[in-house]
Length: 157
Image (cartoon, rainbow, N blue to C red; front, side, top):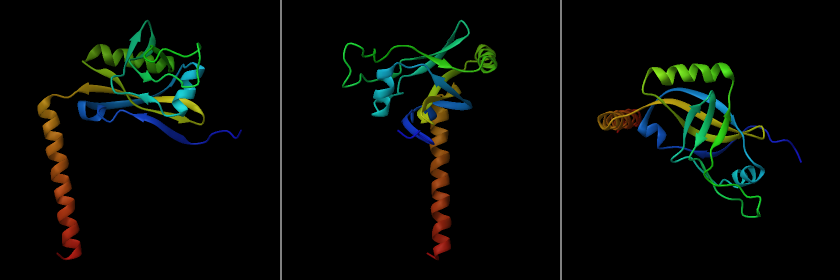
């Protein structure tokens, strides 16, 4: 079998960019079982409620739902178990410092295959309040209207 090349997205957390202000992003590997990888190749994953924590100098991904593998038997995995993320010690130490300083959290933005290995894109994020969300929606609407008007002027309407 030929080695897989490139980036193949498995799942994205679209709601994260709506609920959080993204400050920084990190790429991390993830320790998985065999049936989990097979299930991910079928695209059966959900990042909706997932979040990451740092416990005893290790980064853990919690509440990530990877559905059970259909052809698995007694060797199947638990769908919502805690999974260890693989990051460099220097990155973990900087994350510990940043999370301790402010009210920041680690949120997974996407999960993908990168050259055959499963990776998770983590975001260091700050939660948005309701008025921040409304301002973002108003800003996007204004930009859309400006772009539409520029398009009309170019066409001569």
